[in-house]
Image (cartoon, rainbow, N blue to C red):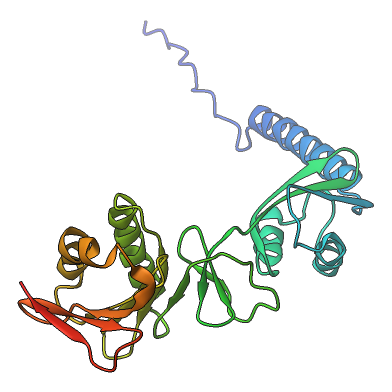
Length: 253
């Protein structure tokens, strides 16, 4: 007699994993709640800017003009405002060098400015800062006592570099460079604090400056007021133009 064995049928997995759906729904609901809370908090904090404070060690920057520029460019609220873009806008104002803006709770902006420091005159009315940058092309007020530099457009850095090198060398001889000009042909002329103009030409300019300090200065130092100019463009000498004589005296080395 053959006995029939009862075989267990394998259980079929459900077509839908309701547990996974519940977990997904719970996670989605949590994320949605957090996102909603963040958005609500952002909208609550991103209120309109109500106060602007401008300060800093400046004398020529107009604080009222800065405030007006800020108000015209307030594109956003306390949180969403683009501070970098606003800083760039303020830096385009005359005499503004550096800008620092910070938010001040609950709805104010605190702006600190650093003013440009003019280090030299460029041409008749332009001003260069301490980095050799032309920050004003047509200044209504040019501070007194600045060295007068000039050159074709785009040569500001070249002229400033040569001025700094010449100043460093000539200061050791008790002189200041009061003027330095590069003409469109590349020729250089320099004016010193003793009132003498130095014609340097286009070639070996640094060498000629040193030749003046090492050799020529001792000749003209006793009475520099009588010297109008010194021409250093000679290969083996120089020429001295005296104020009371019609012709220059040429000296050979």
